[in-house]
Amino acid sequence: AQKVTQVQTEISVVEKEDVTLDCVYETRDTTYYLFWYKQPPSGELVFLIRRNSFDEQNEISGRYSWNFQKSTSSFNFTITASQVVDSAVYFCALSGGSSNTGKLIFGQGTTLQVKP
Amino acid sequence: GAVVSQHPSWVICKSGTSVKIECRSLDFQATTMFWYRQFPKQSLMLMATSNEGSKATYEQGVEKDKFLINHASLTLSTLTVTSAHPEDSSFYICSASAPTALQETQYFGPGTRLLVL
Image (cartoon, rainbow over the protein chains, first blue to last red):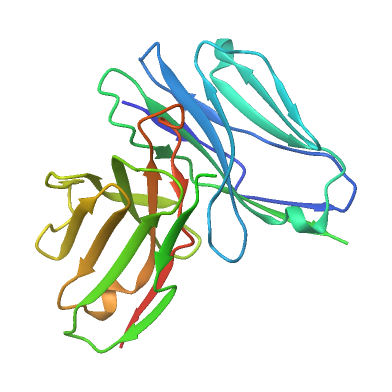
């Protein structure tokens, strides 16, 4: 069975601090995809990144960076120099596998609050 | 690119009425659309997977006669909540994926907040 765990329910930081959101996944499949989505108070899910299981290169996009480690089944997300606009719920998700239905398995989400 | 719209964004209705929610992919053709439900402070729960031209596949525990899904074209899927009751009040979100390089990535609509009185 596939599963995504985000152990941090809520994180509160002060603006300009760095913050890392943890994500651990479980799957028996060798081919899969990992995602991060941002859900601001408006409710819309914003796609941030997709990683396939064969690409372990870390990625940086502006203040965002992602650390994918298959050895520990983790796909952590770091925001550098956080800003108030980063306040949102962040979801890690997993899809793919032998059935390849495209279904997303979501973690429970981490609520990030960035205080000015 | 990869924009998904939903309409309406808000709906308030009386118990017993039916509500239709539309999900459209604006700049790509979506062979597969997904419908989710989200309760406050909870994660997204997949309700059903909708493929163009075929019947939707519902997740366990989701009543297909209660939540009617139609995916008549590559850019439009609809979710109808039939005979809505207060417990159906929730945030409904659709997503779409494309049969190209965008496949395997779901792009989400802005969601529809349903309140049943």
